[in-house]
Length: 325
Image 1 (cartoon, rainbow, N blue to C red):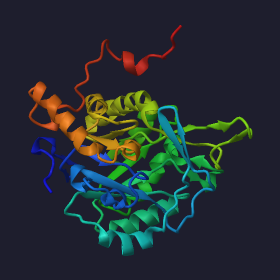
Image 2: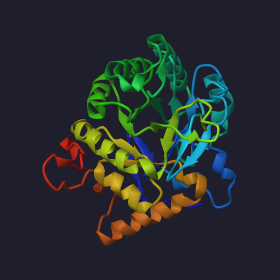
Image 3: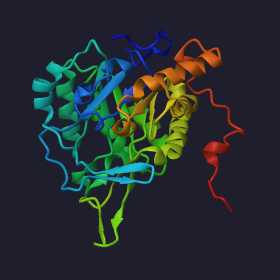
């Protein structure tokens, strides 16, 4: 099966991506989920982020764990996974590293867990490591690592100490200053960012007067979050561009127009997740749509698009309150 057009290729943290499209963690299992579908190919993407992995196996949250909302989806899977040892010993050997790049997703409840899971993946054939800092710190009363800049930096430092592989930090939008957090992560050793993770949300069954999701609150993904994700991506780009730190922009991308918006806002690659649930064959469509845009604008290489957004007035997007009054 052929690779995407060479004009879509790029180097991301030393890795060769055949396409700017990245399959997001939690949406494609451990890289094999969609290969059962006729017409789907892992070669249509630049990389696959594997399911979130912890030190020990986890059974995840009680049901219900997924609920469809207007223009989006709520999920609270709870990091269900077989544990890092099983992933390395039984899953990674079954992956075809000639098809695409594979990125591990590290999650944890303590700094020690992040460090240990990262250390084990460092000794595996995995191409890079995505660090999910949107996890609760059990030693700090459940405060999310990613919502506290100091704790975010400590997670990055802990992972950096035990790996030379590229570290991609998955930033949470559920914080006050995502750009400031990004700056701290860069100082701590981040090589790249994934912007953004899901937004926290809730849906209520009015007849039973209970949340639909068993965990009560859950992460919102899908088209509903795209405007927020775009802004967060652009804000992080203002910090990362001076350090040549690339961004995987993600959040509600369903077509080529969405993907191009993120590239213009500062992303070097774009993540596809929820869109796969209702169109598993969306990847070649997005690739072709980006190529069509490049042809119309006489662009020879996908990297020429990154960060070329021209603001209407200096800093207005970054400093405006968003108030409509």
